[in-house]
Length: 169
Image (cartoon, rainbow, N blue to C red; front, side, top):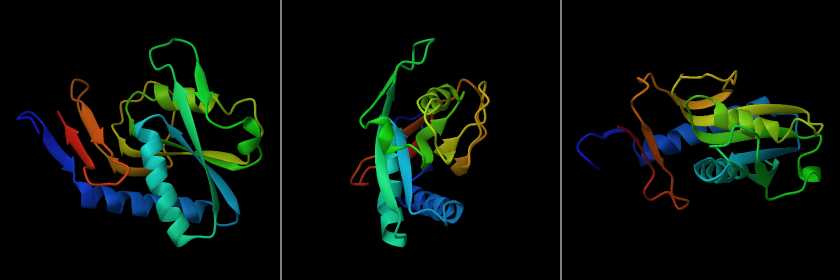
């Protein structure tokens, strides 16, 4: 950790946030038999993996994991997924990312599902910085954090969970 970084969440705190978010997702989807966790590549996908693990432990939901890659620097929606559209048609979709800043990444992620019928789409983020310039709302949030625009939130998510941390710099 460099001197100008402040630890916001440690491994245990992140685990608590993920557990709470998983229970909220379960409550929101209580009548469903299957949901799709659509993780924004790369850290959103890793967060989706962790949510999938907890949801599998606490429920009988069938969980489909979907990876979404978008061209974040593009002014147009350019994306690809690792599954065919039939994998998420007529299902509940939870769009997952690590940090919500401007909302552009989640807006692009939502664009993947616009031409496909679905039951409902929800969003889940570990940290919401509340600097939205796109009309994106968060349904499941680990931590709402008030920051100034020049500050940066660094999320480190390891699939095994040994190095999970959130820093503010």
